[in-house]
Image (tube, rainbow, N blue to C red; front, side, top):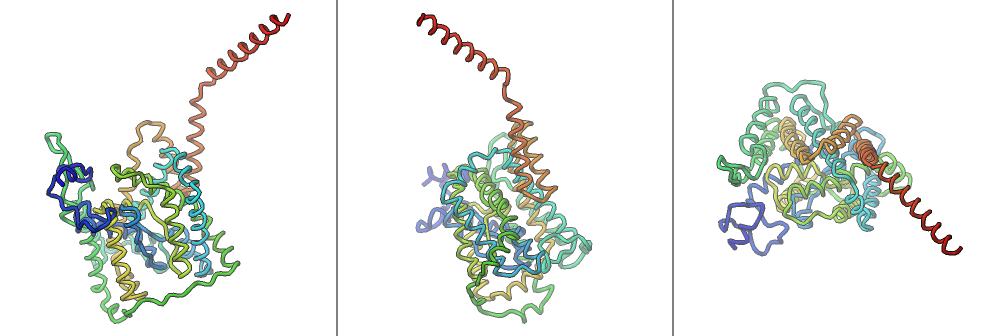
Length: 449
């Protein structure tokens, strides 16, 4: 056991003192650090999740057993944004959009085309998408912290009124949560370099589940801000009904919801997630893009028929759970069990509690998720790679379109490859080949004479 523990790249220097967890548990959800660390990681992506939940619906995230990493499941942001901005978009049309995206991703995954796309994409373009998504989260998080938000009408940041300095959702509370997380987790590294150059494991994240403490504080403040929500709670799960979808619903949902969502799902929910997973967990086998794509397709084919918000995986959620201590599928299982229990006990009335959650605290958690995702782009080793990455990220941020940034990055990458071609060498080899062919033809003619 000592040798196995010492060989674990996630736990350098801990030797046989580590407890790997009960032997009957699947390896995908065995603890890599501690229960508190995984619980902290379980709530680490709620900064990206709760704003959309407050605006529309809730979702279910039992993916820990399948992938063995803190793989989040979150609402499809583009479909959610369209649903919120278009008052005429009905529930069947939203479900149709989710089913259309699910069908495309399931096809790409089952046929292996998603794996081909993943292998062919240049790394600087993928890094540009990750950087733009991370910076977008960070910019939105700062707005959450600085300005008052109203997620009952939109999941986007509202910048109309500055956040008050004091109060149960004031600026001081948000800054206090920010300082606490920084003091508890530092920059989020698992390892630290000592003064003598040796690498030692940083234990602060395991000892102090910062995200869990901050989230618990926010949950407590929900009842302090509005004690009347206790009387409004209704026990029992919400009834399940099969959504009836007509052909007209499908057409509207496809063009208004699925088409804007597809590029984001392919790039951020599959490609960026797989790449970020290999960056955060280099000791694990590379996550299969086909498997992730099929996972998104299947979960929506099941959930959308019952009115569940269309869901996908997300690089931002993965970065958030990792940043706050999630290292295995256990963190996702903990989160799934918690959501399932709350859904069965309180049903839809639990949304009233979340409606009072301090948005400034959500902004703090979202800020760390965005920074963690953006930092994945720090491995660009040449100026040319950084150039492509920054152009891709800049276009994505300016146009608010990952697809536009992706196309720009691909075109720029191909132009740089064309510029590197040695045309003189190609012309020289072509001319030499022509002369050699002519000499051979002339020699054959002399022999015939």
